[in-house]
Image 1 (cartoon, rainbow, N blue to C red):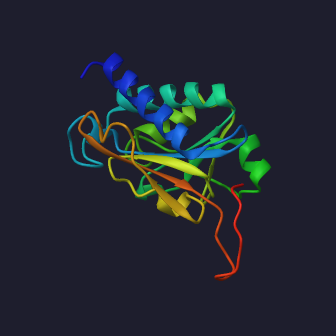
Image 2 (image 1 turned 90 degrees about the horizontal axis):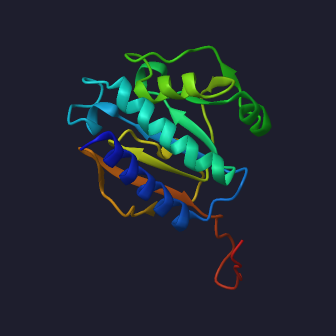
Length: 182
């Protein structure tokens, strides 16, 4: 798969997820990604800086046009800390932690986000309204309850399995409760 084909397929997936999740300007979207899996390797074993840059650049461009904020999950070597813009972390009241991702401790996408964002910071936890998981990196801990599985238009990106999550408000009450769409 060429870089252009990868970008085109990723854009198609992101637009499809946005259609299914009804995100709005100001919402938070999480990316979990194994560049190793995208290029056909085993998660954490064939990190591809070029692939990480391409993925983050593509997603940032698409989300910025919608006013949606991106948070990029790092790998387990930085406890799945997330990279996002400082003003977004402050807006949502997230505690900033002291770590800078590297290719072998954070991963290619977190490292790419740190270099591409204007004022990047790391935080331990977020509550995003939706997200994409490229390569089975486990983003569920960072998506708001109640999580809704999203079936993206493409099930893979390169060689990586792709899943996504949206969210909805909790339905509380009992059999007599009435629910409205937010």
